[in-house]
Length: 461
Image (cartoon, rainbow, N blue to C red; front, side, top):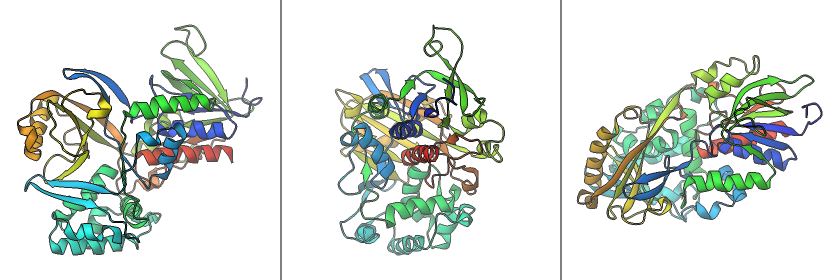
């Protein structure tokens, strides 16, 4: 069927969270949608895989992903696919923070006292990892964030670290408080972060509502949410999903619309194995792929300065996985400072491990370690964990492995804002989605879902 005779046809290229969201939203608006995904599974960079471990078969998330109560779009996606109960939000923000050097435990937790930021005042006043003077200065800096407008382009040209220094934040305070939160959400340290993005993160989490920063943690593997449940929701919505299928080319169709050349690993979709390419026709196409892949598929003239997509840098995340023969972490998760470890999560239940404990370490802004051999990382991180968790020192390691996302997120550097395009291109019927687009959010699951909603909305207006 040609695009001209089928104006309700849409193709979404990319089956990550942005593509899943765009496809569902387009189907809800009456479009007949085909979703094309290169991998054999959905979920993009938030996925699971099976590992034949010495400790027994494991279901492993490629990296630890959490979300916050303020992530309303992602929470909406969870509701849509029937996954809310499988990734609950904690009743009230409570983060244990362990000083690896001093062995001292503190907590960041909120009260029910409105309005924000008074809900964190008591916790900050008792936070043992700052001096009394640093606590007072931190409170003033939080209030200073109120005066910042994240949408101001001038803020995007400045870095967050310089702003913190001008507002009386010592290096120790930046490490023990601001980077503790910022590195995990932005995947960069304060000096490498756009002030606009940092202001958005901290204002949304600290200054909007008392429960905004409450943490949601999946109780099941990510693949259960973003592949199994999402795939079932797409099927119910009538979306045709082509897994293990690559979009090779995109070109305008005579008379309007688009033609998308695709090739499946198993042969042409609908054809015999090894039968070459097929062509999909659609009135609208959403490119929900990483920025470099989008650049390769964009037709000439679709974006002003298309090479800006190539200037949008990337940042890695390293994930360290350790299986012990006994329980060594007594809480669901733990943040650490003044050591190498950043965040530690207990993933025993979701992984299917029958005995012992499985810990996942999420190490953001990991450019210095992302290429190190696994044996070097093993020696380094097992020693760190033994110092951080006393029970780990006497436990036997049943398995150790690492997963690496070398291009996990876009780099949130100063000047990033002007490189991020919106959902609408100059080519009629062609739209962009992905956490790297101009969502106002950093590269998070929330940003990806918002981008998919924006692209679908633009396509159906």
